[in-house]
Image 1 (spheres, rainbow, N blue to C red):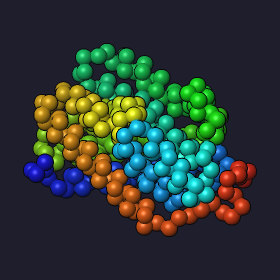
Image 2: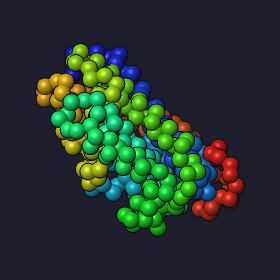
Image 3: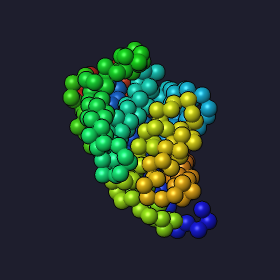
Image 4: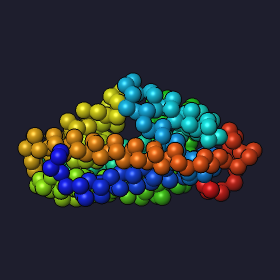
Length: 276
């Protein structure tokens, strides 16, 4: 790690912080669709500060943390859950689908047709009608108010997620470049870094996917580098990701809370106004 070039790591850090902000935009749009418009800076505080609790073992502390922050920003429990669930759902489904499509360009010893089929399923799960059916299936329907069970608001959030995935792939390229190791290119990094992130999220009880994400990344990078080299990249990638989250949290602390307008807390908003 001591031999890493600093400039690419700083670039990867900047991409990570930008991704945090884009997640907040997705959450704010989801809340608006659910009838609870709230200032973007408030959603950013919930996402950036509440997300740090995922590193506590147990997998439930992030929910409690974001609920407490949501209450302080004028949201009820259902809306606080929505601010966390929707960006995560989009990142997992869209990110997983794009990582699978990117993996078709890599020789993993698996039929590209299988990757394409799984990608179609994953991307289809991101659509509003399917996503909300999944919420009902896993028992979240009573906790998460449906932002919309039509296609309303889906394209905007889909393309915001695509931007986050692109930043993740570019960030992965920069982390590898920092050590002068063989670079898989953009598609290879999307397949490896985004795919590993999705695996880490799915293993929910593990704090922040710690260890699981790194193991998946070592396997995903195996076509280009040795296991020790991939482990070095995975460790550096984790440190950059944690640094990005800490930096985003510091920015969130410096931001003044921005509540919903008086009289709109804890009750649906029927207008079509967007986040302040």
